[in-house]
Image (cartoon, rainbow, N blue to C red; front, side, top):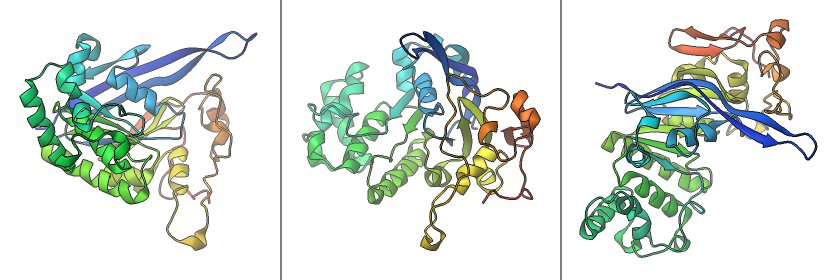
Length: 325
């Protein structure tokens, strides 16, 4: 029976940053009271514009950043009570850029076996055997074991990164834009491989992306993030069919179509992104929202649950609300 593997409750991360020589330091709240639950064996998608806090949230999950407030529970245990090395055995990352996430001076076999060495799992003979097994699982030929990252294609490098993440048999894999640095022709191969591995190994994915097509293809449930907050969360089919938040609808309207006569889509969000150091009052989305009213400019909205669908908006959309374009 599946259970909630990760609980995130009112999670915050605030950075103290300098804004100029004579202006002193100000708070930048990259993650602002995020609450999420991730079910075992599912793919949880997290989407939003660049700078919305997606990557910071992933670093908090991986223990690469220390939270400012709130809590993260893994299997009902606070992550701060789990030794860092033990947590790494359960939650592993696949980073965005395979060109920079692999050590160019290490061979493929050495890169993949590194977690085994760090965690002191098995012997050198075991390491060699497990490297061969995981290379086969991710579709890397044995002849590449002694090659270096510079000798591999982009797709092969990302397969090496996936093999390194999986060799410790983790429960959760955090995929931060896992295909955005790859050629389009290779992206589908990597995505299909990830989905096959999830079924074979019983993995749970947290998929962070700005590519809505990828998220729609892979995710079971999707959360939409804006300026450090989760503004909408729902099962994937529900969210893509009937978005309730104006920001979500704008993102969906901005997806390119294969029909050239339609030209470039207009998302109606404008070109200015709010200053995260000085966010707007009330609903932080109101300066860009075509549906904003006076209450939106003064009072932050509270999360509203409509069945299995959460939205943080004073005036949730429905299927009868006219589109912006």
